[in-house]
Image (cartoon, rainbow, N blue to C red; front, side, top):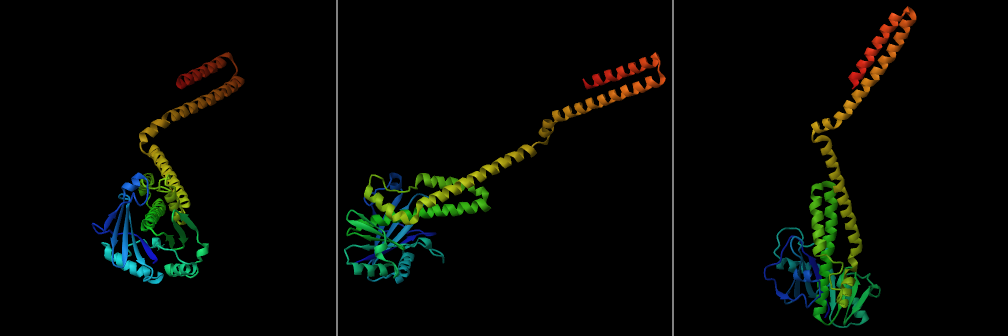
Length: 342
C-alpha cells in the first residue's frame, strides 16, 4: 500500500517532552560528526499514521521538522493537508492563531513499498498531489541500491521495500529544507537590516558565519558514503543551493563594504571635529609662514617706492647733501626691513 508523508518545517512551536521513541541517526544516515551530535530523530506511532520528528542543530540555529505519514488509500492529495494539520496541532505544544509551520516549506513525499504497474503508478501520482498535469515519464529519477527517488513539483516519490531507506530520505530532505530556510532567511533579514537598521548588520554577519562554519554543508553526507551522498544531491537539487549561496555571499560582501565605508566616514569626522585646539595647532605654522611672506612683499614695495622718490628728489633739487640724505634714509629702511623680517 502506498503511503504519503507531509513535511512541516515548524515555526513558533515546540514538541512535547519525551516525544515518541528515539531512533538512531547514525544507522539511518551517515552525516558529518558534528551534525550527528546535534540531530535527534524520534518516532510516534498512531492507529492510522506515523509521526517522525527531526530536531536539527543547536540554539539559536535549531530547526524542527515534523513529518506525518499516512496511507494514501484513505487520504488523497485534496484532504491530506487538512488531516495532517489537525493531527500535528494535537501533537504540538502550540499557542496562537497563526500557522505553526512555514507554509513555503509544506512539501510531501510518496513512499511505494512495493512494485506497481505503469497505469497504477500514474493513478497514484495524481492522487499524491491532486494534480493531473504531471507526466511521470518526464520526472527526473535516481536509482540507488534497491531503491529509487523521483522528483515531483510538490516533493519527491520514493520506491523501496525497506522503511529505513524511506526514513533516510525523510531525514535528508528535512536537512535540505532547514538549510534552505536558514540561507534564504539570512538573505532577507540582512537586506532589511542594511536598509533600515545598520547597527544590527555586524551581529547578523557574525551569526551567518557561525551557522555556515558550524552546521552548513552543501552536502551533509560524508563523501565516502557514495550512495547516500548521491541521494542527498538528488533530493536537494530543487532548492538550488549554489544560487542561494552566491546570493548570500554577494549580500554579505555588500554589507561588509558598507560597514567599512561608514567606519571610514566616522573616523574622518572625528579627525575634523573632535579637538578644535589640535586643528588650530595644525594650521598655525602655515599661517605664520603666510604672514612672513606678506611682510616680505610689503618691504619690497616700500624699497621700490623709496628708490623712485630718491630719483625724483635728486632730479628736482640736485646737490650732494640731498643725495646723501636720501641714501641714508633708504639704508635705514632696508636695515629696518631686514631686522624685522629676520
